[in-house]
Image 1 (cartoon, rainbow, N blue to C red):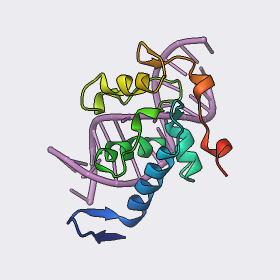
Image 2: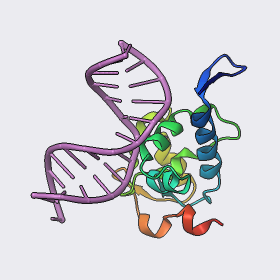
Image 3: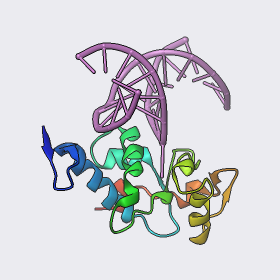
Length: 122
DNA sequence: TTCCTGACTCCAG
DNA sequence: CCTGGAGCCAGGA
């Protein structure tokens, strides 16, 4: 099912809702914590569609209020999405500004900072 | 319309 | 423990 929106952009209705769900969920991640794509997808009921979460992040840059996409990394704590920010170092800088240490494109103490929506949220 | 790609993950070997 | 292949599904060519 497709529908045309006011901004003249076409999205599948389900996709649009999925986007917004992802955005809101990411905004719930506490400052100084991180999570991964798979957990978000699972929490939203998409199970194995972790790639779609990353794809949604791609569209999150224009979202209001801002989506802290830097807090979403892959399951090993690597900043796989860094190249999609304004500069390749933006993601890391944003994280460090929140007190998260990053080394070699990986979140230090990832397992301790990991935030699982299906456990932290009701 | 078909084919390819990807901010990912899981699983069999 | 490491690797390759498959599942996933929206967009772009």
